[in-house]
Image (cartoon, rainbow, N blue to C red; front, top):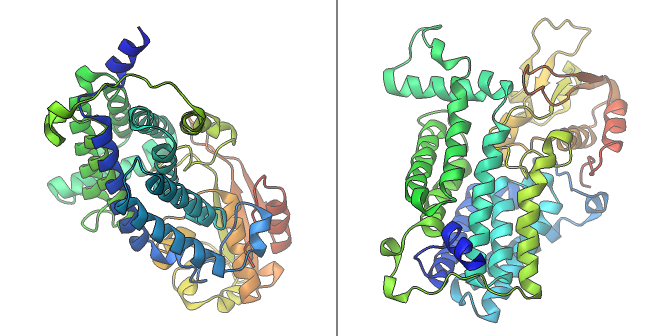
Length: 431
């Protein structure tokens, strides 16, 4: 009975071995592509402050980053050269996952959603036989779509980025209409985006609907590439590459045999008997699937909770005086914006950390406030900014139904340091 349920919900016609081989090549190809697209983030240029996950990371020498990056590169070459069932292939996957995790631990900014996902994929492929690895990776993909949909079902998304998506689609399809000509872009219409993700997640579970869900997911990701690309909202190249990865991954994980392999080579999809290393894969995917449910209570960060494009999370605004702005490097000066209504005796400039992140390291800013506190502390330390020349406004997560937020003002560098000390994880910059 269990094997029958397993085959009906997670089984497929494509042999597990062939799926695993395709996934390994996909992991190598897109890892190289994303590492190149966001190379300033990994090469430790020093232009953007780094904030490790734990305090011990602040004292780790900078050359360790280069060593870990070389290990990541070498392991990707090893993955592509060795068989997935060989000891060398599994060792290469383990080295890739370990080295990439080490790089992320040394800088929270590197905990990009794609990097976190690729570490999970590598661990599963390294520890579980293909007949178990493929269903586990399907479960990871389904829960990713599920949590992503849940994270956007709120007031903040409907009035923010969701509305922006609809307006941009209308602009591309019909030209730029006059202001107020898109009343349907308000209200609950932006919820069509998370509703589509939810339908895809459910459709990928059952074989009878899986084919349609794969096509729907491909259409959604291609549409996002159009909206977010240089012809749309102009997001970073890494976002476009990652959406392309999902199109290819879904075809491999959920596609039918006749699309990829010889159906005569099909093998049984029965659930293998677990052995010690398989439990590592099961526990890792179980953790990745359940941990995001703690995000509304602060038990999980937005990105590890697959809150992709979600806007309900905590926010931080950084303001700096004229004297402090003069001490900043030129790129930071160029992206500072004047605060409306400011006087000569008040904070006059607001730092746009998201824009600076995209410009300097070619990657989105890690959305947690503790990381952004570490960034401003690092800037103040390196530029010699005085305590009274910088302040911050801490906005707590928004109410799901009203979008209202509580806020707390940190009026000096000393208060910012105190807030950093109270964070669960490290919020101080790396030396």
